[in-house]
Length: 268
Image 1 (cartoon, rainbow, N blue to C red):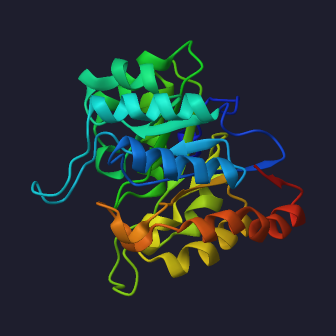
Image 2: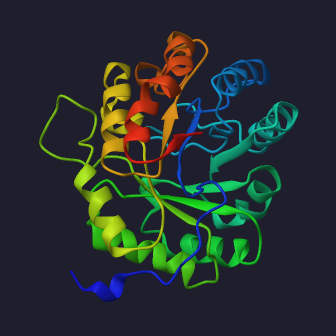
Image 3: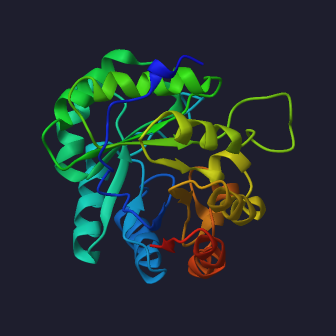
């Protein structure tokens, strides 16, 4: 690989701090005020400071629940503000960037939009000089080089708060939803100064694998996780089978801490 791909960013996102392992948790999507408030409260009680939740949802089927849009953003910010949490949520359209920034600290660019270069550049321009960040997920079939070059679209537009996210790639293996590529985490950290986090929920597609994959992510020297959790997973409108229930989320920090301590980090 051409090492000129190495980004020129030297600062860490506010979400990622030296010596720590950040966990972001929350439901796939905001379904209602009551649902998100209950799920976000569990995130808070589990000891985590960042909550995820989708207001705009890219779905394979046009007939699936697409999110609540701006109403969902308002729920995100109202609940998170009351609980003292920071928000990570997806932006899909350049026209929505400003309104998403009003309600969220970190703008997620999903795997389907990793190669949406106009969106990447517009997001980079919008957050330049602000305290907002971007979480860029790797595309379903993207190479590490393509992933890093997508990040360059954001950083070259002036943004310096970018976090990469490995979320699994599409392979021939059907036993999991995607194949989590932890080698890509290690390679990316050798080639860039950007932090790298892992999404084990989307990679596994099943909740029984999320915690083992989370532990492996710590060992691979990732800088954090973004996991799906729901106070009533069986009732979730999106990705119910991969969301951690409250009990599992409450024990996640404790289960990860020995692995984090081994590499000199603290789970936050």
